[in-house]
Amino acid sequence: MNSEEIHSGLIWITGFSAAGKTTVARKANQLFKEAGYKTIYLDGDDLRNIFSGRWGHDRSSRVDLANVYFHLCSHLSSQGYLVIISAIAMFGGISSWVNKNIPNAIMVYLNVPENERRRRDAVTKKLFVNRELNDDYYDIPEHANLMIENYGRTTPDIAASQIVNSYQAVNKSHLDRGRNLHWQRYYEEEIAPNEPTSYAQSVFLKLNKNDSVLEIGCGNGRDASYFALNGLSVSAIDRSVEAIKACQKRYAHLPIEFIAGTVTGFSKKRTQKYDAVYSRFVLHAMPLDEEIETLQSSYEFLKKGGSIYIECRSINDPLARSGEIISPTERIGGHYRRFIIIDELIDRLTKYGYGIVDKIESNGLAVFGEEDPVVIRITAIKR
Image (cartoon, rainbow, N blue to C red; front, side):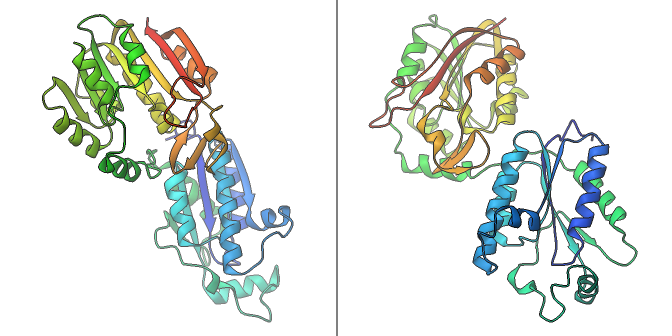
C-alpha cells in the first residue's frame, strides 16, 4: 500500500514523559516525507507554548488541552495531510474521540520502564530530578494500534520504521461518527413527518409515467411511498436497519422494494438500471469518501440519459457555523453533518461523467417548522 492509497490521516505517538516521543516522531516524519506523504508534524510541548500557557497542569486542564490538540489534527488531516503528533494526552475519552472521528488514525504507544525514563530525563529536560514522574495524570492505552518497547536495542530509527510499516498496513475504513445510533433512535421515536417533501413533488413533475426510481437514504419512506402511489417503480435504500424494517411494515401494501444498506454495497448485488436516482438530505450526512462512492455507484445504476436528483445542506446553511468542529466542512451539532460546497460537488459530478442540467443554492426550499436551511438542489444527467 502506497502513500496515494492512504494520503491523509493521523499518527499519534504517545507514552509517558521521557519515553522518546519527540525523537521517534521526528524520524518517522522524515521517513514519511521521503515516501511521498504530505505531512505535518506537531509536538505537544510546542503546542502548549504556542497557546501561551492558557491551560494548567492539573488533569482536567490536560484533558481540555488534549481535546484542542486532536480537533486541530482532525482539521488538518481532513485537508489531505498526514498529521504526526507527539503528545502524551493518554485519556480514555480522547482516544475514543480520535477513533470515532479521524479516518486512518493510529495510536503508537512507546513503552519505556520508569528507571530508563528517569535516566533520560536527568540528561535532557531535568523535569523530574527532585520530584515524582507525572504518570498518575494519565491512563495507559488499552487499545493502542502499535506498542513499541522503545529502549534497549530498539533505536529511534527502528521505532520510526515500525511506525511507517504499521501505518502503511492500515485498511482505510468508513467512520460511523455516531450516525447509526443517532438514526436508530430517530426512527424508533417516529418523529419524522410522513407527508412527501416539496423536493419529491418537484422531482416527480420531471419524471415520466412508469419511470423506475432508486432512492438513496429513504428514511421513513415518505418520498418513496409518494413516488409509488403515483405509479413509479421504486427501490429505496437506507443504511438504518430500523428505518427499513419500519418502512417494510408501514408500506407493505405498496410495491416498493426496501433495502437495508448502502448503495455501494447494493451495487455489488444488482445489475438493474434505473431512470432516476433520488437523494434528499443524504449527501451531507456522510463523509466525503462515502459521498464519492455513492455518486459513482449511482452513475452505474442509471440508464444512459437517466438523471440524478440531489438536495443537500449547503456550507452557507446557518448550522454550518455551529456545533463541534471536525473539519472545515464537518460539524457535530446533535449529530454528524458535512456541509456541501456547491462548486466542489458540481466538479465531482462532472468528473464522474454527469452533465449538470440545473442547480440552485438557496433558503426557502426546504422549510420545516421554524427551520429554513440553505440547501443545494442539483439535477444531473448520465451522458
